[in-house]
Length: 389
Image (tube, rainbow, N blue to C red):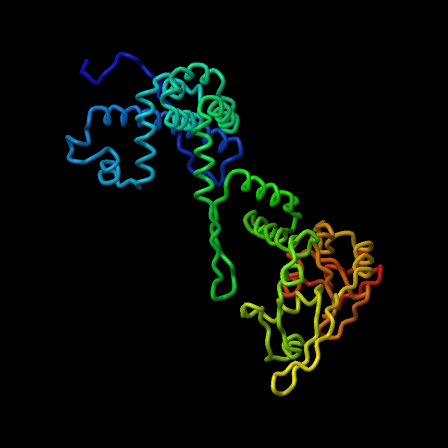
């Protein structure tokens, strides 16, 4: 036998090709995916073992590359981040042989092995003595493995854990940009505790979607974040700024509000709002009338009043109980009271002209993407006196 050969016989994994996955049965696709994952596992193991030998022997130097990472990037056209990850795993596999053997013999999955290698990388002086015990405890899934390793690291490397927390504080950020079309985009990174608080809040505001809800999970998450912002602005616990709780202040001329064209429709900061968005806000907001003279001098400032008085809102809530859009069960606290005949067009602020709509469906109505008359036809809300137009 040659130097690279062995007498060990390893049974090959044979994966017959699935000619048309789309027309295959559920069982056939399930079996095929399991076989492919087995092949992927075998290839990952062999790749890592071979790369570890190449790294140890200095093959990159012989081939004229300054490092194994550069070899992978240029010889195999690999992205730098991927090359770095592969080299880290190869080095860990070469150093921590028991962990690699557990991976090779499928006692731990590829993802669990990755977590173990990262734990070894962070605590190279403590991992060897705990390697055997850890390998006996892991193997029940990625989340269980991650939790176990987190507890272990808190026991053996508390200063390192605290450095991680300090690093997270240093790296925290929240960057936002208002686009030319008014859309707000951003990117953020939160420390663990604040991140957990945000996720818990978002999860609480994402009830299971209705059968006819066409929003993606990402869109529903964005709507939940919007609801979180609105709940803060409208809540009694929000701080007072300039004598008032924080709010969106929109300046709008009567002509613009009535939809006849022209006129002012912008925020205090000068962001121009779509007229229909302003009309949507006007359904359930506080309004203060300001009358200007011909020289733009203020002649009269009316007292701020709610478009929907609190007792009337309670009556609408008592009748509707939740968003009236078909299939939606959003609770009243996350809903606006919508004027079926627009308040700006002279529609009555009376219970027969009001319905509860969550902010998502409220927006669809104002975009004319939801036919409220059709949605309410024959429903308990129409028979209770709601008169859709």
